[in-house]
Image (tube, rainbow, N blue to C red; front, top):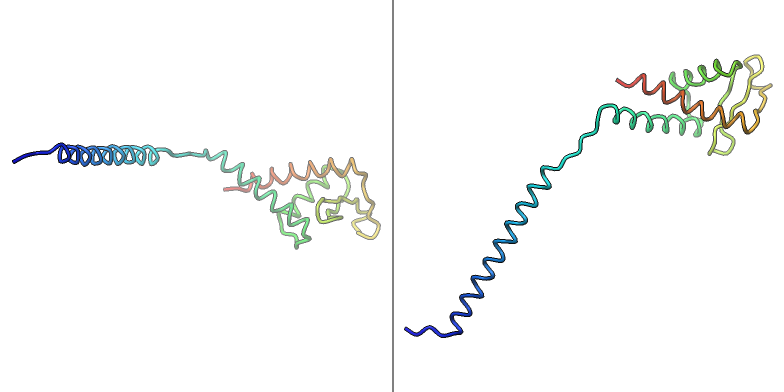
Length: 139
């Protein structure tokens, strides 16, 4: 039996293809193991802070949308009013920003608008109070 150069070359090509395929499959297998081992763990504290921020944003959006107030919203306005020293009403002037007004004798008819600076300060304090209340209420 005679073996030609062509036959030897074909056998070597086939062997080389099979070897390359095995190497590629082996790399993919190792890569899948590495990917499966990677994991991210978020601490409980980070989760609570993340949830607090999201819930705070939702509560702010409820005020902006003029939704019916719940206990949490009333508690926020109550604490803000107590810190300010006068009864406050929270509303929205353009659907984008919260607008604070001082109520006279608890009636909206005689409500007095606050300056832009006071409004900005109250807005920051509103966010802080909201975050504190939400964080404390998370289980």
